Image 1 (cartoon, rainbow, N blue to C red):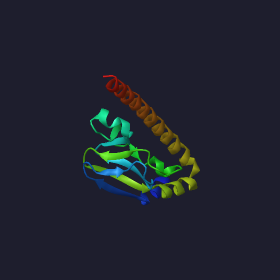
Image 2 (cartoon, rainbow, N blue to C red):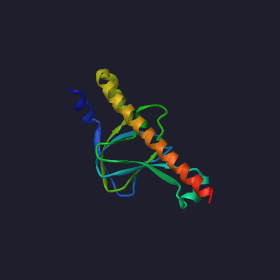
Image 3 (cartoon, rainbow, N blue to C red):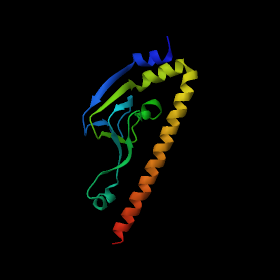
Length: 148
């Protein structure tokens, strides 16, 4: 009985069609996913004041997920709410695991939890940097638009 076998028992493969939303910003985070095939855009909602400056768009892509990237880290940490929307750019295939089941397995195997959570912290930090950089670009574009 190994850790990977325990995790594999609670995982399922799932498909999402092009343009389908895998997770929605602000929704309760239940599942943790690993992208096996395809690409997904991580999108953040824009404030209403930015709609006109961005051609009526209500969201901005802050990161593009590739194969082996993870989605739904919010299912593993409080408060358990998605911070972005993940929308499929292609037909996608994922491995899905209920966050609370994964946490139970990791709690029973603390030696495995640290490396996973350390890697997850790196993912979160990288996405924070990507989102911050995108926000700075969007604000610069918005300021330029308003000055015209």
